[in-house]
Image (tube, rainbow, N blue to C red; front, side, top):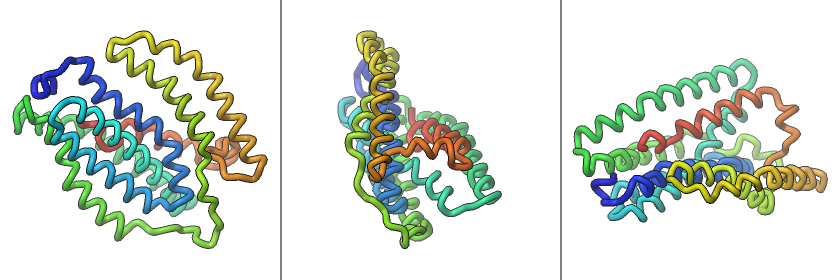
Length: 258
């Protein structure tokens, strides 16, 4: 990438870290949007955004376009990722749910192991200067096939008879997003050689406490929260779901392309 785009190592690091930052910002809000508007719809929107941003990254004429495409790609993956675990929770019960999560975790693990190898083969096949572009472009035909598969095979709402509050907790999303940004941005900046954003770490705890208080207030008012914290203590299988979601964020589409 440095040779093909004639840029610095620090700038290229944003190609890697910008994706992770955008993914972390969108994950929780993406899950809430799936609850409100349907998981199949959010999967289709997220995958469409991922495919288009992959094409933009692969065809990027300079590094600014590449970094911007990776940020969009991370947001799209953050919208797409939580729908898988949400669908598993909705469609499976009892031992079947455990099997489904086990297969999901196995798929993520295998993909995370194979992805870098395939990426290396693509670079070897198409050359060091522009071979990296095919790591992004290969997502386009795969994503197109998956869009058709999702539209045909993934069910719509499985709880159509249950009223759903489609309003997004905007203030909660802002507080959580600010907290995630305050935590991840300093880490990303360290990887690119910048140390001044470390002061943002001081804001993580206050923003986290403000988010918790706000979400409890939203629940007490009878509105739909971005994250109902009580579910973390009362819902069976939550630790397994959280573990699967964490694995997905590490091995989500596009992570192997770095």
